[in-house]
Image (cartoon, rainbow, N blue to C red; front, side):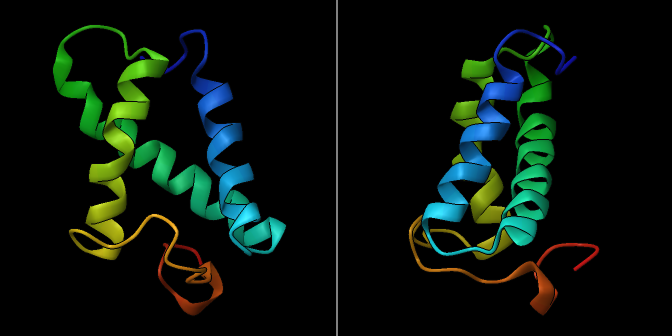
Length: 88
């Protein structure tokens, strides 16, 4: 359901945003992919194919699930290599 136009662009934007916040490229890719998938799971309850706009709306809840409710989106890097994300 996430194979709609724009979902890859959202993933690319998430990775680029994490890199701009100081994540190394590998960690940004891992964290971005994980958060993108989690946002997709959160948006899946809509009952229709997930649009890019649905993913974008679900990013804050995915972020909160990983970092805690109200954690700043620009709170500095918490590296995937420190075990925050699965596979890190």
